[in-house]
Figure: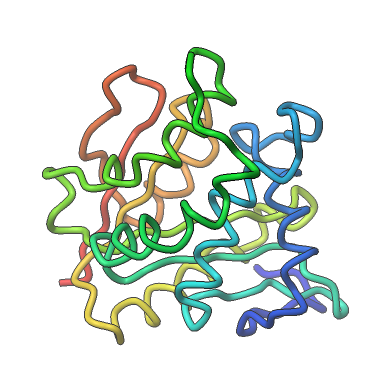
Length: 204
């Protein structure tokens, strides 16, 4: 059962600094990614901030005693998000993250991926056009809050016309795979290098 003194609520702009920290603390396949890259801004700049700017109405926060301890963000149409990301988000971060000339490290590969948002448009995911990211601090995991956040997000995406949703999950993150499978997600495919699995959930 969910622990007391926590609740799911809508995202607010003032939540962003706390959510950025949560993104880092859970960013290494569910473990703390602090210091993993040249700047701790990298993960939230790629996997959090663009989502709450593009679709703040699809952002929800797990709030415990007035402090964010988890969140979910998503977009109802990945294709439309990719077009916005290319037109708006890439130029905004261009000076902060120059395009890598020699990708090969994880950091360089992430930045290179930032410059190629069309990588999110995988044909096998056409039936799952929405996608999302969810992160919860360890102390609040395993208490039913992940399911509560996902249920709220599903409703928001469904109301905005999505017929299904997908997630991209590190193949190293065994716990996350178990979580999604219990919710009814099924494995659709893997990335070419086998590092990421794509799971889909139909709203039909």
